[in-house]
Image 1 (tube, rainbow, N blue to C red):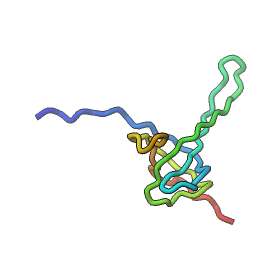
Image 2 (image 1 turned 60 degrees about the vertical axis):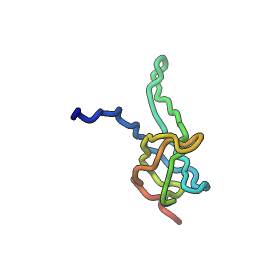
Image 3 (image 1 turned 90 degrees about the vertical axis):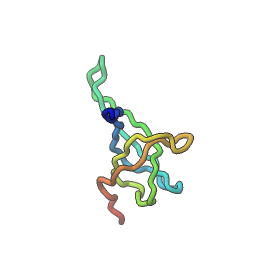
Length: 90
């Protein structure tokens, strides 16, 4: 019997839920900050990922952790791993 094959580590991102209008899908906006190579100012860039939310428990404003997975739809290849912080409702 051979040893089990070690797969690559899955990418993990943390971001803010900006849309929950779809069924079992949320849009998560992830911000990354890095110093500009020439001007040395901090640059903010955002990326939006569609993530699978099986229980439909995420709401707009929640801070979540998403993890990379196999393609689940044409544009959806992430899933919600856990909710880090629930949004405060007024």
